[in-house]
Length: 368
Ligand SMILES: Nc1ncnc2c1ncn2[C@@H]1O[C@H](COP(=O)(O)OP(=O)(O)O)[C@@H](O)[C@H]1O
Ligand SMILES: [Mg+2]
Image (cartoon, rainbow, N blue to C red; front, side, top):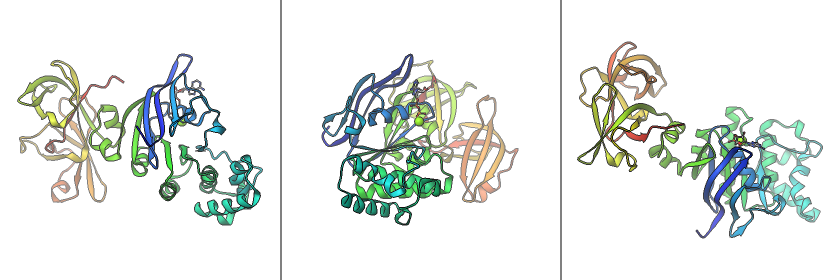
């Protein structure tokens, strides 16, 4: 593809027997904010350190623009990097920390001074130039790290859980600031996080990583609405699962046999075009906000029946936890708007769990 700022081609990284990254291919557009989202240990940092050049891939290729940089030294790649721990030089002032990449490049002092002032203003730290890192809060230190990473205007900026050490309020504020700065600069950002909310709110696209592999890539809305695996459905937002058996096609619909022997059918358009075979174990999945509860026996579209074990009032909605009959499966979560109907439901009530039309999804039973 033309115009990609960063290209990863069939990247692989092995440490002895550990395969940290496997068959990983991805193209990142210029000006794009892309998040790498995955659980701890899934290979996110390994991926970023290979892009930065601190680790060499076992195989595969990394390109910045049209240029192959797979074996190029980190300081030749022109990449800005922000780490989870601020990694500032403790003996240098804020201004000197931020100036560091320019001094390394032998830029004239007068030009450095101008550039440092401008960048500190962009991260709202112009009054702190003479301070030392230990005299700053965590959020301020991380802003210094961001300033240092953007001062030489790198074509690609890498961030590895940069807000992971901060408390929630501050994290949300800095998420907004970083996103805002990225848009003003038109910078290409690869942002690593294990926090799905952070990934969804900040990114143009999100790459979900599971055990060293790319599980799915897409816009936040695509990933939320159309996960292609149980893993992604479960990792992004909340999802209820029901183990069942695939029974076959009937008139353009999938037929699924439940544990109690009942059969439900779902539109093929609503689920993956994967080739399921009769007798195969599958997972039926549905999001809590696409379910509602009705007094037992009232609704013929019920997927399950069960007992309300708990209800949580969350202002604009209720979250009900329902124990399905005859299922050893986990409690089901049902989210309903707070209205007279949901307000009348009580703990211990026997209820039908009713999915919205088109809300059910079908996945291969996840092995891992
Ligand atoms: N230097 C290393 N030597 C051996 N194994 C490593 C090394 N770095 C990472 N790993 C392993 O690679 C896997 C991915 O780690 P990492 O990239 O740090 O994951 P994440 O950043 O998603 O938490 C883990 O199993 C980890 O133990
Ligand atoms: Mg990591």
